[in-house]
Amino acid sequence: MPNTLIKNIKSLVGVQYAPQPLRSTALATLPELQNAYLIIQDDVIAEIGLMEELPQQAAKITHQIDATGSIVLPAWCDSHSHLVFAASREEEFVDKIKGLSYAEIAAKGGGILNSARKLHHATEDELFNQAWQRLQQVAALGTGAIEIKSGYGLSVEDELKMLRVIKRLRQKSQLAIKATFLGAHTYPEAYKQNHEAYIQLIINEMLPVIAAEKLADYIDVFCETGFFSAEETERICLAGMQYGLKPKIHANQLNLSGGVQVGVKLNAVSVDHLETMDDAAINILAASQTIGTMLPTAAFFLRMAYQPARKLIDSGCAVALATDFNPGSSPSGNMNLVVALSCIQMKMLPEEAINAATINGAHAMELQQTHGSITVGKKANLIITQPVPSLAYLPYAFGTNCIKQVLIAGQKVG
View (cartoon, rainbow, N blue to C red):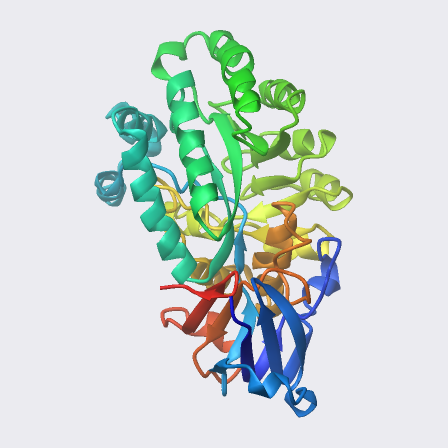
């Protein structure tokens, strides 16, 4: 792979190492170099600096990108997605517009179980081909690392099918992909009256195969009223941890479910959603190493209250931003929209939102050594914007595609 020189960069943003997730005032600090250059060698960042200090030999690099007027920033790190699914659910979207509740839609055969039924009838190849197209789309929107969950299988056969699709995506894609086992997404119809039997299925039949085939990095549970209790969540996570899977928990989306407390107790990598938080949950999270991942596009799509981002940040919580890309409650993998919504609706500063969507997102996938910031030696996953007046213009112009070019592992996307 030839070397690449990106020259005349108006602003090279996110020039930092950040071995720990950024918190409080540090989250609002986004180091940058003005009128900069960046050299890519093979698939990593080899050198950065000011144009006035560009080595003479570097000017002779054959492959050059002129970034005059453009901002260059690290590619997005989307640490919570459900990108593998069999079909969209726009019919439920219309039902919601007509006023039907989640329970009424579920009674009609909608919701997570709807996706599970459709996935059951899809082949592994069909799922892979659909997911591959979605992965290409999010890469073109600037995502360079992504976590993908199972959870629409809800049976041994179908959960394994999903995780094998994710494994194939990892093998083929240049994106960094982390896999999460979310068998505890909801209770299948056959186990609605026998929760214990389904938990036993997860622990005794799903987890051993997942571990044997090395199909997942993390284990997740939807800790929520009407789904999995805090006690059930802890039990399932502990079982996964016996197989080396670290917890990442769906917590406090609809109610004060206790998911944050369980996540912190188990030293979870992240607790995700956090629409419903009280002082106790915020203080516990702030005192921990667990990252709070906020998913504003889900709140937007469901017309829910947004996460209390300002209080989380000001209390000292480490926060990340992600898409929750899924067919039911957040049918978008666009991290640019996530960043914009975080500024517009949650009053995050542009610098805070970008850090939360890059380096802190990388921490929420344990990829901080290789992704999430502009650092020599890290993967050359970069967003080159169109000529824009300032960094704040990116979330300000929320309906405009400000991306000129995306590089993943040093290679142009698309």
